[in-house]
Image (cartoon, rainbow, N blue to C red; front, side, top):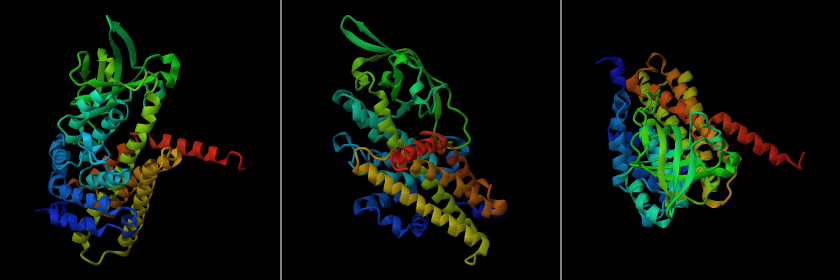
Length: 412
């Protein structure tokens, strides 16, 4: 057995749980109530038994991380923020953030499948008719169907107001529907989605006021899918293009009224940015845990001072990121109008954290930092996309700047 194989991160479930508990912090635990802590601990047990043992192989083979996701769904852990009547548990956004961090620490790719279910389900819950919601939400929550969120287009990424996918209203003898034509790209789980929340415009001249959301069934005629992209990271989650060529969508599958899509999108991205931020903290924690595991194997109980100093800085950064994540998620729970600047700071700071800690963990491991079996190099690869999706971090800094400027009006 080589030295690298000896250092590989392959803890047994009880060992993983013990290591995870060792890096818990009382300061951040204090921001969780009893239910939220219990839920986190329950998910940690599932992660240790079902996700961690598969994570490296899933990444190596680029296989869809269905086993880990199914394990979470079978235990009723997918629909945390959704109403109980559709199979949810009506938990807080803080509980959801803690859950996503925990799942990501075990397998980031599984977490991306997990959060995409929420991202697709949330607009359906908020804007679909009772009939449509009842048709799709229970399956999204119990994992029997997959959902996707269709926003990004080849020429409309962070600037969602410039969508070109067109929705044309039709009326065939009193049978009202819309015909959707256009394309979407970088759609998570897009290759297998059974329910696609697709944002389109009823009139490009209206800009944001023309954006409308529709629920497109995965079996719809005229819907085709590209092959999943070959990506740098998140290998256990698929990302594909969608092509809509005259896809007919019943009028009842419109989510809200015509022109309501922009406000629904802005409400939805609050949830998706909590997801990305939690992933950032989870990846940072994973890299830190993997580094601790390997460094103890390399150096024993007495770590070099330079390594200890680096670990101390990483630990502090992870705690600060988790405090920010939980505090902003709590504000989302409490306020109907949470601060856009704080949400942007949370997303940008926490996803930058995931990248920064992963790179530092690789550095202090020296020649072992890029060895696949240790897992740290996977954290680097998986972390990068979190800085890009759900609004790039450059866009988040722009939003923070705008919020700062507005806050100074009339003061300076």
